[in-house]
Length: 623
Image 1 (cartoon, rainbow, N blue to C red):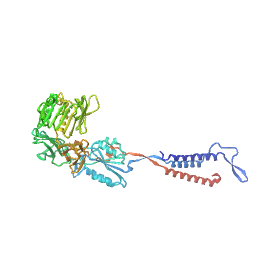
Image 2 (image 1 turned 90 degrees about the vertical axis):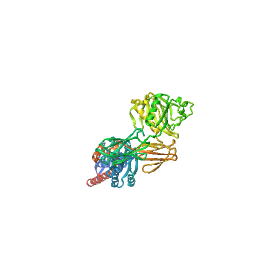
Image 3 (image 1 turned 120 degrees about the vertical axis):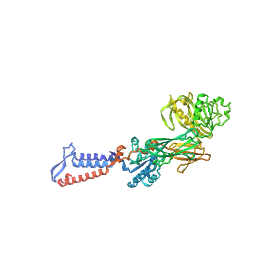
Image 4 (image 1 turned 60 degrees about the horizontal axis):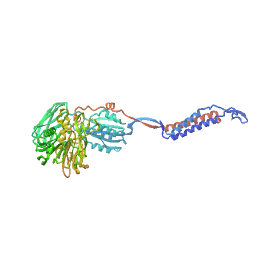
């Protein structure tokens, strides 16, 4: 309880005046005496009353003045009411790949869209609606409005994305809907209980679970192998509880070379091998049979070129030279490797050649003519040197641990890499992995790639001496080296990425992005000439610049989203309300001014009735 206008309490001094009046009037008692006027009431000449005698009139007047004083001060009491009275509804949609699955002829997103339309059209006039979608992040698709047309238009534009929704995106969506009276979540999977409870929404949270268990077969992986040397394979997974028939088609550079029909056991995977490719290029695998989710039915990979290419390996350590040369040949048997000591390079005829790749371990890179370069344990820039370093090397550490990689995230067990250079990457390079020294906490990049005008560049900060890359206890170092080498030697005009990841292309000029749905968007380069975008659809993206064109192919696969048969049946409202946060109530001020005024009027009328009754029975002198 409280007061809206505390200044109104000054009227309470009227109660003090009432008491003073009663004290003054009752200070001398009244007695009846004989006179020519028969009987006249006069104040007692000597006796004075020391006790204030209060009658019913005093209490009625006191209560009436108190009620008027409280009403003037804006007296209120704290009330409780459901938050839903605000009439703001937030419609939150899961836009993950699973919502694009077909349950018969209608997708799960279409089913959710129909439910949301019914909520909007059946709501009372004046209710507000906002539409929020979440996938990798949360986006407000329609701002709160009493006009239902913006919300209905936002529903029509909803589209499932080829990504797995993140719990953090749902939390952000619930935070955006925090002020809503009712929050309706449309999803094909029940969110984790802590996701909703951690955001503590004020409104009533309702889950509308759409979809039913359906069968699905997905392409989980595609390895092109080595052309003319070793065959490749494609991994298929059956996410249904019964055998699934599948037809797999394989294309190389747009030409089909294999068609396989197979039956995959329930909840199992099948590995389909194929003969060595005849040439390098773009390999495309596609499931030709129909199933519920089409986003995971195709996958792309790039096979290395079959053309011979000269590769230079320079290292002052003979063991490191041999290890790096073996890895290069293992990646592409068509590499013709020249391994030399840096001191012998300039005096040999190798300095006159043009190389497709130069692997430089702990040596000076000046005078190397190569289309792509990989720096391993790069040499710090000496004082007085006029060459421009690829990456600044402010110092070295005696030992570093590999902590995380871009493709796999944080490692469960860090891998000890040994001595390493501390790298300060320029803006045109992207880190592939990070590590931290054993005696410190500040991490720094241990692997990175980028592109300059004269070709692609890669950096490995750690030393590879003492057969580090062949140590079975430190396989993460070998895998990281192979991944970095593959990215450095990857074709300039073709790139295979995963949906949801940021793609960086060096165009050095504005470029157009043509998406798989044929929509066109302009991309502006940053100060290093790179354009960035995030593919959310599976398929072919074309980047067209004034000087070059790049083809980007996006793959999608996620175990959780592709598994459409393990979904629980839609929950009833009682189950939803039992586990999700209960309806919240809010404390609000409830004014009681009208009630107080009515009470004061009643007391004044009661006092008038009492005075009238007294005047009738005792006469006006007793009033």
